[in-house]
Amino acid sequence: MDTEQGRRAAEEEIRDLVEARVQAVRSRDLNAAIAHHAPDVVAFDVVNPLQYLGADTVRERTQAWFALYPEGIGYEVRDLYVAAGEEVAFCHHLYRVTGTTSAGAQVDMWVRATVCFQKSDGVWKVVHDHESVPFDPETGKASMELKP
Image (cartoon, rainbow, N blue to C red; front, side, top):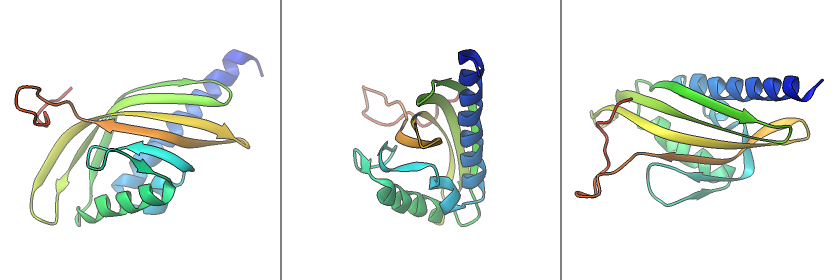
């Protein structure tokens, strides 16, 4: 396979992994949501603390997130960009979370994400997951009302 075909195939594999995560979040399937995380993944989430280290910690965080939405989570990805080589790939996108929390709060927010992958033994694994929301420097508060 030539380099261009290999790059396109790798990019398509990453797109498939992102779509699998979308489906996993929508169905609150914990195992599927974290299935592609490396054991030593580093995650920067939109909630405290500054970082989550390791797949077990990401699993706990994801489980807590899913538990906040007893009726399910709306989750969509847009503006997905993927760049992939033979062993390393990254993507960035915006995603929207909607739903009603167990406390009755209505959530409708957009988040920025960058995900880095490494291929090992023929399998892509998430080695870094960075999610953020912008903030207003004058108030110090997150800009939760922004929309693409």
